[in-house]
Image (cartoon, rainbow over the protein chains, first blue to last red):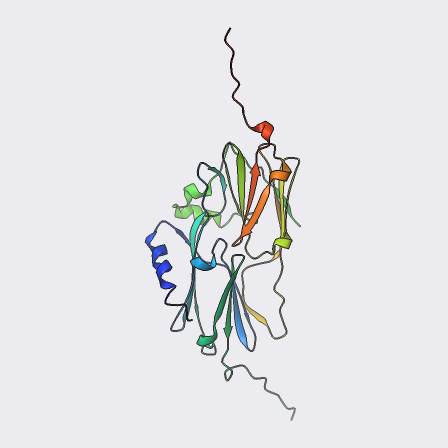
Amino acid sequence: MSKELEKKEPATAIEKNENTTVLTPRVDIIENATQVLVTADLPGVSEKSLNVDLEGNTLEIKGSSEIPIPDGFTMTDCEFHSKKRYERQFTLGDAIDREKITAKMSNGVLSLVLPKNAKQQARKIEVKMG
Amino acid sequence: MITIRKPLSMWNPWNTLTNSNDPFSDFFDSFVEREYPPINAMYNDTMLIVQFEVPGIKSDNIDVRVKNDTLVFKGERKDEALAEGDSYMKDERGFGTFSRSFALPFHVNPEQVTANYKDGILTVKLPKAQEEIARKISIKAD
């Protein structure tokens, strides 16, 4: 991923704050013959506060969410963390074409498209009745 | 569709954040069925703010109403359409319709309520109706 290097900096900034809750985001993973689609719920995470890093076979999602409480307001109900991080790692199979992975954030949902190598794509084997 | 009524109590708050450092609290929390979507609510003298954590919904599928001093939220997250040959390797996110409603602690003018959806967080701002804002009454001394 081309943005890998420039994205490292905010990740370090996030790690400085040790009081933040770390959650594992829920994901759906859908596979077909040509690609694997990973969809992750990251509510409160904007494109800027998201990191997707690929190192070796490990694809890591890291995102931070901070929904500030405005000055002078008193919290009365708290059912989700206003400040948190999301982290999850996936191990990629050999079939995934590392160069063609794309990521998109929309409404707090990350969509990762992991295309398979053309030669490794599953072929349908025709079975002949003998 | 499931409608859950839970009053937004300002005077007897239960605050899950206060227990967040207690590992047992997280453990026991896992047995409690939570209402969806989770909310954070906060107030000052003139306004109540309710934040809903609802990722991945189109604004068209969110319905927020204030009627008779009740805030009603309805939403729908659509299922992913699987094409032929697609199969789930993991299926954790869930989909469907959901709603929550809250008795408001003060009168609200529905026309002044605003809702904004960003990064999967819906923020609803409910200003107190003008007649609810306390005025200081000057005392005349004879």
